[in-house]
Length: 325
Image (cartoon, rainbow, N blue to C red; front, top):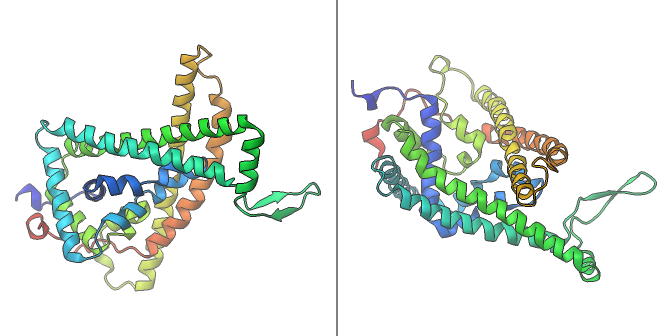
């Protein structure tokens, strides 16, 4: 029996769906750079950004018209196969992606961080001297601007922090742009998995932009459980989505701290300070906070997206030749 007709592995299907979406988004690099802003958000928001990273770009780029979407999927499949073939055009594709997403991330990250500073973004509660909590506006632009005028050093620090956040956004964008074609070249996804990923993308283009839904959508339905109730299936998917969301959230939450640690190390090396200076205290302040935020958001969004996600029907799977446009 030809290998393309063999059953695909779960890992193959997850990889194929992820690769398919990324190549659909990269087909419109300008629009992708403008909408791929989740990881450009500064501070604690960056730790939960991977949960929402693909939502806005998918909404902006992936067509709501089924026929147009099918063409987008077909073009992305051609791009995946080209990246997985000869190495001759791989370097050019990587450089193009790095330039587009790296510069886009740098500009968006710097701009968003600067806007956050100018708006005086803050928590919605503050503690009074008496110990009671009081509600407050989440922004205080006039107060922030007055502070920068009175203390120019504050404005300088805000500019430096904005550039730092922008550089992190640019680094993440460039890294992401390089990894997509490298992944397609280094991992040969099966035709069967790619056909199944096309079916999922055609039927569920938006909900699967959320990581838990993406992982859940390529799980195959239980052949032995055809008579289970729809309510029970939703409950199972909700529980699985919550677990997948928690695991994914915790895994991604470490990335901002790791990047910051690398940045601290590089700065210390240049300024001839002890290599680890500042890293331990930064990790103590940031890592616990980021893991806690990502766990809560990952579990909640994972459960919600799981309830709305349909798994692959194990009795109605497409073949490689029957679905590709």
